[in-house]
Amino acid sequence: MASHDRDRAVAFSLQLAQAHHELRRQINELQAGLGQHRPDDDVLVTHCLAFCAALASHHQGEDTGMFAELLRERPDLAGTVANLVEDHEMIASILSRVTELADRAARSHGAALEAIGRELDGLAAIMESHFHYEERTISEALDGGIADTGWSDLVFRFRDAVH
Image 1 (cartoon, helix red, strand yellow):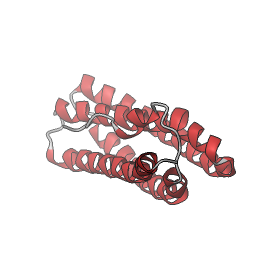
Image 2 (tube, helix red, strand yellow; image 1 turned 30 degrees about the vertical axis):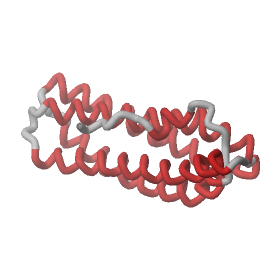
Image 3 (cartoon, one colour; image 1 turned 135 degrees about the horizontal axis):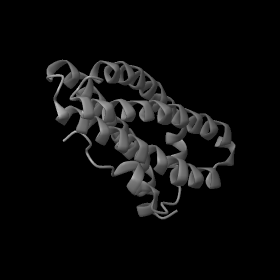
């Protein structure tokens, strides 16, 4: 692997950690906002929906791109990747509930915000565990070099959902 390619590959684990940091920041900001905003604050609902879309996009990029490329280089990580994909499915289920509640809150001017808060609390805990596991188990393999077939755009360059 050429030096430039190796540097880019090493950057993948750093970019993954930075993407996770940004998603943590966004959910923490949403959770804090639930306590500070009026119950009819539609901006919070909009931010919530944008966050859900950003997290779903990040995981879709991992599932359909990064993990596929990773497994081509490191088939020994099949069990780890299966665990991560299972986590993504569980998180997607929570995101679906949050999105449904946010849509309801938008129609009722905030009546579902308390339920959203409970879902976000659970989601934040699962995300934290998932991100730690993912970074611990695949960072070395990412740094070993995998091809970027375009998957990095979804995984690393999602929109800032809260601002």
